[in-house]
Image (cartoon, rainbow, N blue to C red; front, side):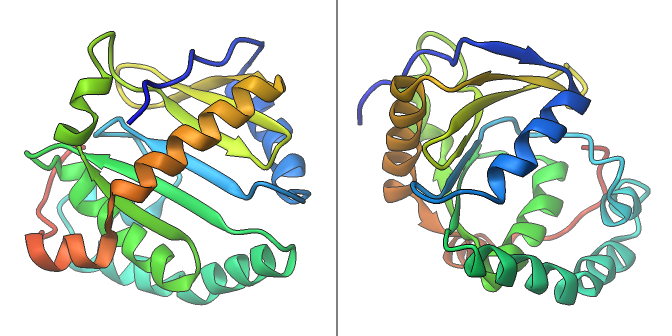
Length: 202
């Protein structure tokens, strides 16, 4: 597998600016689909009721809340399909699965069922690509833009760096697509691992 491209260099956005910039581009994807690379093993999902339930140790409530959003999420992916593109995600998972990932993988399984194409990539697979440091969190929005999404040490989003340079966009889309191609379907991964949803603090 080829080495990762250089990190996107361009406009630095705050967390609020990133959201305002991202979604209009997302809903107007006309070519190239949407590709996402997730590498960090623990995030803070303060706006997710399911995550909050999990973080306080209520496994049953966390799973119920994931299931409760099924209809709204189905509508979301139906809208994506109607807009003529597909969302893809390569999720890197280390051997010792963090409590956060125990929760997130259940959420991603549902997303995969409803329309997003999600594969799990082993951290050992990307290790040769990380000799210069851990892979960044990257999303590509069609052929329009690529963002490096930024987080602090607590896993909270602090903004993003956006590049519209075709070399950056195409380079990262190709790299994530290659990672995706060596990944394992999330359903197969979860069934083989038998990952429980234990209490954890992320």
